[in-house]
Length: 269
Image (cartoon, rainbow, N blue to C red; front, side, top):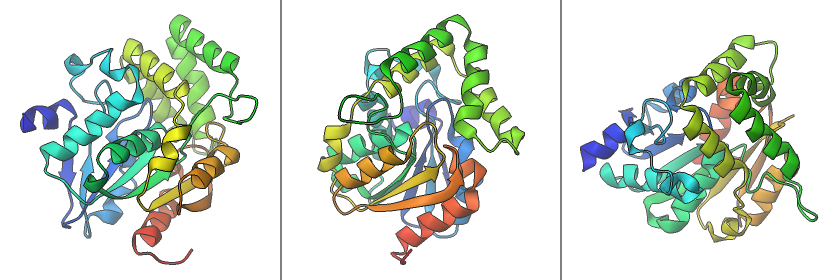
């Protein structure tokens, strides 16, 4: 069973430390997106990387529409990987949608984790009368329609919006390639699950030390969204990054590393 899960989620274990730091990738990505950040942690931590089922080099045959029709299904991936490796006291680092996936996992099994680091988190992407999520319902429905009708065109449009940092086109190209390398049907479902989830009520149930990293000029998770997450998680730390876009671990890895290390060492910002 352990080996099945390790293989299913394409688990990678590296590093020399005793405590585990787990890096969880965002929508349309895979564990390779962390390659600029993980080397800084190899001497002090055991680093665990994985791909959600349906992403990267995971076992696509393990994909189950019912399970992955909600973020809790992806949270089960996190918990099952931890259980398969007998992990405890895990530092969880989640990018984008993985922030809420990690929150759900930590609420279900709080003793399995020691702290949470949420990069570009959003508890709800859709605006309503009392909440600004960054998108209208019509915006997101239109995005899904484009995925259905012109998947390559969707990737071409979304990648530069997510990545920003137009002076480094290679990053946008990598993200676009990542979008296009995934199964279109699975990715379309993951997009729907991501963009129409509402985890606002879950935030208050997270009791672990938590760092919220908010990017500048983030079109996917604007400032108001990150501040909301911070305000709802009691005792959390909020840092506005100089990094622009939605993928600071790729575009600004040095700043990302520095902020994570300060939090883990409980150093002042």
